[in-house]
Length: 240
Image (cartoon, rainbow, N blue to C red; front, side, top):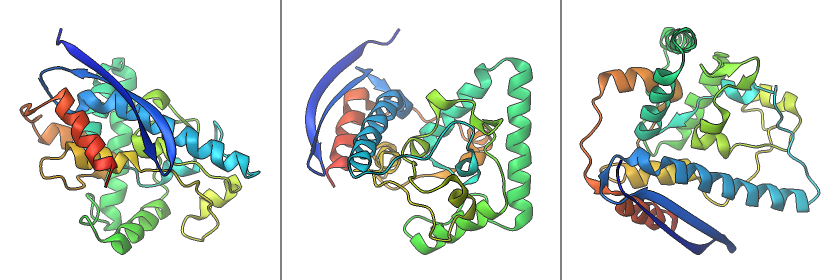
């Protein structure tokens, strides 16, 4: 078993002091080794945002069984794709087969619609928004959605942890209409994680439905950084 190292400290994000901690491999590792800490950090930031919203008299309307947002395009980084593929691989054979079939079906619908399966290039926010709205219009459910609830909730993508709304549930069915009131979070951990773990510091991402194909077609990279180096890169990206 690889030796780990733990560190903790406090930082301020948008004026909010936060205690953070990381436990990562001491030696060379793949970037997904940082993912559990990034998930916990995303939860912390979301909790801060929720508390701020509730102090202002609003309440979060998201609840189990309301899966409208699970038909949105979910951007994930390559390390998250490998993590999700590993989750599917570890499932009982029957369950894994059902999930793989849903991935295949979702991808077929998107490709048949004429949308580029990998989404627009980094930096084109208008194209990204248009892609997201067009994707939502297809009504493609997340492959992990079961009875309108997330079947991998503890392991859900970072961006899903950061998406909460105060608008009525029905508004989420009209994405792009301006009715959705998403709560502002102090930092987008999914983007910070992606940039800090990519080779060139760019925002490497793909729609969630591409995860299994990406992993099948792309060999895992050789480890080139230690766990503490990944933590350092993430904290550096947070300060930008």
